[in-house]
Image (cartoon, rainbow, N blue to C red; front, side, top):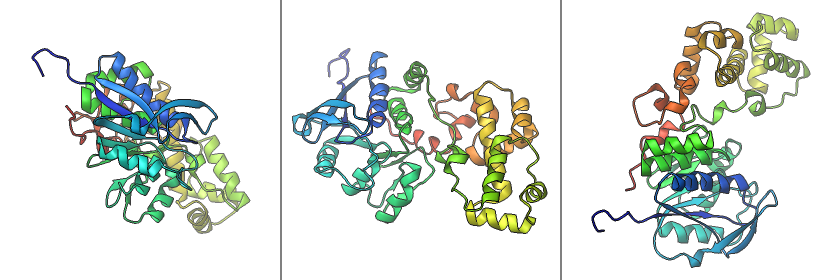
Length: 345
């Protein structure tokens, strides 16, 4: 390359297919195309195994080029997921993944796209993640994969896997940061109004929605009362009184039906409430009081234990990149991979 000549553009290939989830495709496309607008060196292409229109799971049709139309090396291959992928891969998808992976510098999956990588044999003896709803299925079907059920995204060598749907944004931003540096990645995140580095892992997402349904009507009502008012008195004796059960019986019921202790469930609900309060601009002291966690110190301990980040660092999440030594850079999930991504220049 001659002195002063602009470096060659990096080809980013997103592989679509029948039934692909639209956001799994568009989230990385938005990140990389926004990065281009801000001066990054990418050329983004949308391919499918056979080329032509592809109908997504939402019914939207995407225009694609065939895999064999691509010539030369691919910098980044991204394989999106679909709701049906854990059950069955579309014809030709695994072969297309193998073909493009062999021509790629690095390969990444979004959400259940990890199942396509697994069926293509790319995750054997590697660490990986996928949507929290399907981590157990991935681990059962492919016991040779070390499945991390909580990570937002994972890097193992030149292969990256990410959690459900919107986690494709987190992964794509981290890849841009590795390629172009934290300043440009931060500008992309600001433009898209998203986290540059999301605190915590998949376990942070809605306590109520990830809690198994109870077969015990009294326990169901108790859970609803905790969710509705996290700051109320939810001590074990008070919960047992409201349920009309002994503390020992209630604890056993929680473990059998919910997979957690009463205190553990209450703390999870209060943590979720605290995150919402901080997201809304609340102070640390007010958040501790309104969420039911009580004191600044208790709030700090709970955040560090569950998210690996202090409440103050959580509030400053848009100013952290995962590259430095800030507490935000230690957030579990995104930080497991961000500061280990190799520079791709």
